[in-house]
Image 1 (cartoon, rainbow, N blue to C red):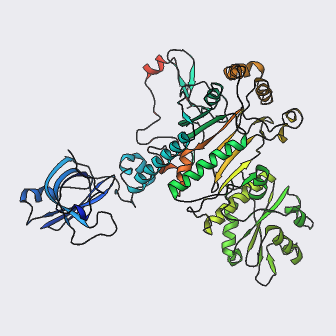
Image 2: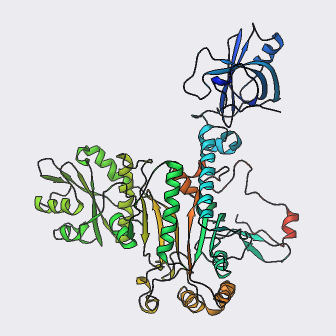
Length: 584
């Protein structure tokens, strides 16, 4: 038996008990005539004590040879600690060591295994197995396990059946590049790793499973960022004989359950917002509604003077920054520089100070009088002491720019409290999205999303006006889940694929199996998928997902710990009938 107790378990009521502990050496304080050692495992830290008056000379010498991260086993007696530590659960006791076994020695770690480490991201990713020993990462992984268990408890309790679907599938167009896998047994042919189990969960509904879920790995070969990985995890769900309202109710319930069980937070309201309103008021389809600063469109009150920057713009739009009139000119200039960064892309920013006496002072006083600026304040909801920030340009671009500014200001003002949770349903998305480069439409969600009832006829005349029977669940400015009512008949699916540019032959080659299934009594069905990585991070009070994934990739899609991806040898290439044609 390597241990009778773990390192977070012992308390004062264990005094005088003989115990066996195992773990890693966290730290050593050698006083010469006595040694204090912190022993760590997943559960906590226990202080060990060597005393030359009660410890043999050989054992003292053995204890003095220990170093950080050695793996050891000790036997000893629990005693009351002379200098108690109220900051740890085991702080009232220590273990007087009578036996010591070194189970494994350790090299000096490349960074300190402490909550606040001296290791940078790249170094910690290379030695991720050491990083996991640190409390912040360890606790994040334990937190993820708790969230996952609560998801399973809730969905299983609501009659959902967990079903696994294949990882080696056929490549289908779902918006991002596939990861492809060559088949040795089928020369010249390839599997694809699933971007989602979309078609399989629809087939499960055709199969009569009624309520399906799966916590599943998905794969997309796309550019990465802090909250995106090439492999990610979904809570994938589908239901038969449902309408949109049924699905929203079920997954509101799941989200309430998680917030209550994981965060001890009760949330009753899940407001709903049209996609068009989200874009108009917040500039994006996943608005953070924990704070205000809604957009005010200023065309009607700003395009009547000789200021051509506004007159030539498709949209003039502003936000009121609470207390922003206190900003110095230097601080405002820094804001202007911020929106002009390439990542945001604005050409500049106009501002108007709302003074406490009701007067206004703007950067364009030459063109606008007090009455004009008062209207700006009225439209943006600005009060005395606020600052109105105004951008202009093409509608889609300027909304995205002002949305980025809104979020940056909220961060600076401390308005994005991670302990406050504000869920929101965004509904009635466009069914199709126009690719400005090609002039062709593609599915905003995926090709199996149903249009809103009664709108399919518009596909021939006004395809950009057709709304999807689709919905996203947003939490604190992040999309945590999305789904739709699906197309469940062959004729409608054929119309949809036609408008996405598929010929009959291409549609048959790509989706023939699904369209055939629709001819055998497919029920009305719909579903939703949560992004588990992002959901866990937000519930854990973080914006980025990396620390909630045991072995993440870096921003180049590499696992620097195992050095993947990596070349394969010529014999493997030959077996797979592959030939490399690398760019020089």
